[in-house]
Length: 187
Image (cartoon, rainbow, N blue to C red; front, side, top):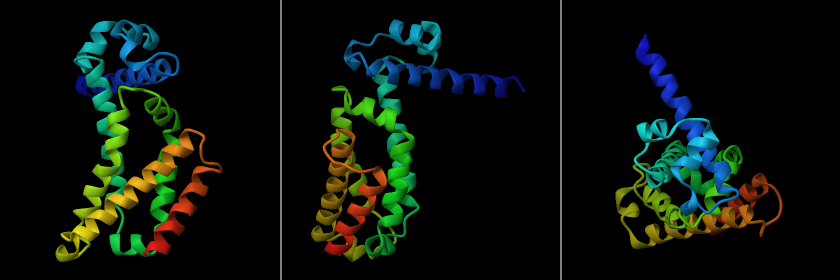
C-alpha cells in the first residue's frame, strides 16, 4: 500500500513541477528558469524537483517525450488506407489533443529551448506514418511515399503552428477541416 501512495505523490509532484514550468514560460525564457524558481512556483522544495529530474533540460525532455508518445498513440490508432481517404477524424483527434494541451503547446512554442523539438516533430510523425504495417511494404519503402509523408506531416504541423501563433483564423476544428480537404484533394 505505501508504494501506491508514493506513486500518487510522485505523479502529483511531477504535475506540479510541469504546471509551474508552463506558467513560468509565460513570463520567463526557458533558459532563465531555475530549479529554485520552479520549486517556489510549485510549492515544493528543490529536493523534490531533483528526485524526478536531473535538471531543467531533463524536465523539458520529459515533456517533449510525453508529447511525442501522445502523438504516436494518436497516429497508431489510425488505419492508414482510410486515413488517406478520410483524414478528418484523425485531424479532429489531433485538434482535440492540441486544444486540451493548448497552454502547454503555446508555452513550448514561445520557448527557444524547445524550438528544435517543435521543428523536428513533423519528421518524427512522418517517419511513424512511413513505418505503418497497414501499408504495403513496397509502397511504404518508396521515396515518393516517404516524401508525401514528410510533406503532409510538415504541412499539417506548419498550419497548426501558424494557428497557435495567431497567423491563421478560425478554431482548431476549422484547421482540421481545412487540412482534411487538402489531403483529400491531393489523394
